[in-house]
Image (cartoon, rainbow, N blue to C red):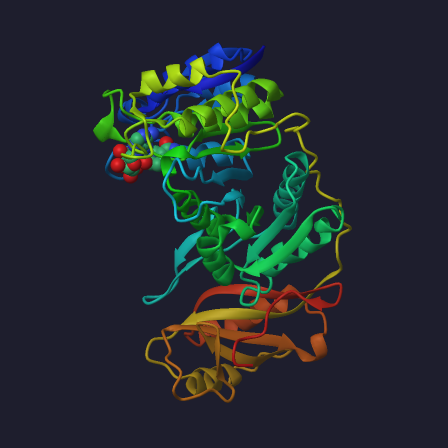
Length: 478
Ligand code: NAD
């Protein structure tokens, strides 16, 4: 028996959860279920997170969460329960298998079996955003070495455990050389430990185009958070039905499993909804808790049901489908076929698949860190780069020297182009001579002088060398 926590959610949630649990029970899943309440009712009771403290206790006890979709009430002030759960429980990996079931479910991509593994905690989703000037707002993109190593290791371990042949990494490291560059570098480093797996990297724009056009060339794809968020939806959509995809959110001690669709309030309570997305999430859960044989038996029965043309209304099609069934009747049809295998679609084989992977982060010695300058950002409305440079140079900022001014990353001083469009947001780069290590006080002194000269400082970034290598990029146009 494995303890799990179940939440039936809102809208179609209770119907598809009941159908899913009926199938799991009939297949002999060994589950000890604790039920918690989450979602709309909890939000409307004034709990802005949509989940009670007692529910966290259950999750801490079981560490496995099977979750039906919820409805987030309209209006502000409600926090996304998914984001909260992911962050609080450290669910760093989002795993979304996207498979087409041609010819039983219509799709432009009959041969598609892709697993998207998305980093779940970092990147632009840290939610650190600021308005800095009248004209400019910013969002911080944070990529950490341990966070990246965990997701990359997870992707390779997943590929090995599920007998996959290839792992692809998507980044935009031709532009974001430090953040996406780190993600790509760690992919290459960790990949050396998995020589049996084919490995490749694509720049995300062309990679995304290929994924949408020829998904059959991909197998497992690992990505930073934002690209993964967007492309996992694209991948699920082009299989032919978003209603047929489940997803897993995995952390070191916790895991959450769900359908990727929402609570579909318009069809709630009508016994019409397709329970397949949640069922496939539950199948991922069964593999995760070590009940591979039950997972396999359910998925093969479900594939058999699908290929017999027994469909819910959302995928029903005259000519391909044989029967249009409601939620409960569809679940009963799957139960009837337990023990059978599909004959056209490929049966699944989870024997030997394990779910507990080693994603230990390699300890690294601290690098020698030397301060060699600072980027001091100022707001200056209607200013010119020449004017700002003159004003700063008049201050005498030794041992720091103004070496460059950029506007939205483009160098505008020295030798800028008059054509460059400028906003009110200027970055002034100060360096020490020959990268000589500085005391932070010299940065503070420079800022003090600038502030006294009425230059409107909005933020600073320190420029460091790490083991002698610059920890900052040059400007575009340099
Ligand atoms: P939705 O996914 O609920 O519905 C989109 C469309 O797909 C609708 O036409 C719906 O009828 C259909 N559909 C969805 N699931 C289906 C199923 N199992 N069977 C048959 N048809 C299905 O998206 P939405 O309408 O944008 O959102 C509704 C609510 O769900 C919102 O409150 C949203 O915040 C919430 N939501 C929750 C989750 C989650 O809990 N993980 C995810 C997405 C949306």
